[in-house]
Length: 456
Image (tube, rainbow, N blue to C red; front, side, top):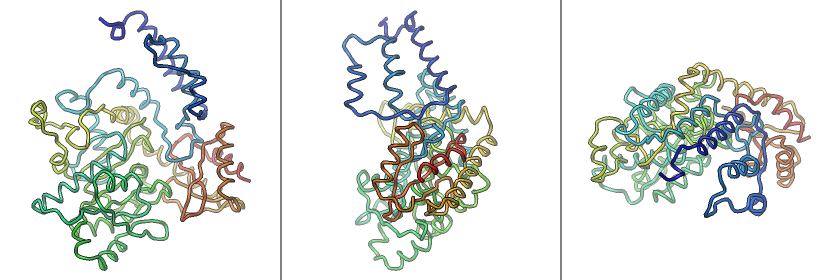
């Protein structure tokens, strides 16, 4: 048997060493770390893939001492840029077991136990959104895949309902704050036109704004629309669209109603903001990324359909060698998105939910919202800062009075170089500014104060 597939003394020593590294990482307060350039990494790491191999000891040393410190710790409590992640210890630990277990998660035939567990986690999310008992879906790699898969199902459903007759051009209604991945999926992947509706003063897409467009749009324009995309927690501003109003218009027009909750969908678990999501129960499809605000490791997006039969009709792949799977009546996750091979990426979330219970998730999400509200007051009380948008969820967007582009960039780079925090510039209505994205229950008001004070 080849050495690389044998569990001998060397393999056992390697496994124990890696297990120790995993346990150390789970236990530590990880430093923020830093980014190196390609030239710097080439100098310190050199050639890592060689004909004869480096051996486990040297490869592990390279990772621990050179490569890992060149990756930012996204779960650091002062990693406040983009949308961070903060997996629970249970989820992170179980992810190690998933990786070691070689489980195929694409079909019930091969992974029934794993799929049963994943579906339990999906059911919890569906219940939070108020979707019917028959709702279901699959965990995919990320929001990009989830949104694309949902919209492919939407178009296939529209084509079927039109008796196979295509419009001059397909189109989807959305707004400026809709995530860039949705726009890219529509224009570059699906060759679908975008009808971009202007948001309100806070950037929210509303049902009334869509009605205004319908009142002036031509017949051909209206005929091509097959879906509308609403956002439950925009990435840059953290605001929730008018889900109820949009859902009403979608129902009247016969459009598919898709809700992108990649970041903000987790807020469904928090009673204090649940009212913001009124109307989400109307959704034909909905996504949320547990690797963002539901404390799962990368990569994990929950994709749910009101009627999974429609998604299965759009996504089931046909091939003679797959007949043994597609003829099954059980649940095959590969039938509900653009993929075939898949790892059971929903298992770490399931395990953490099973260990801690859903009440713990409610409390953790509420904690981040409490810190956000305190952070808002901190910004309002600071004479050198100005809040730009009232927060719906856990994003605070604000500006440093008097700063220009270069000031923000220098400040951000200095914070990271000093290992203090990772906060990046952004723009709102063309104005340079910055933002906090707070999804880590370990982030405190004092963490935010440290960053705010660094801007004086």
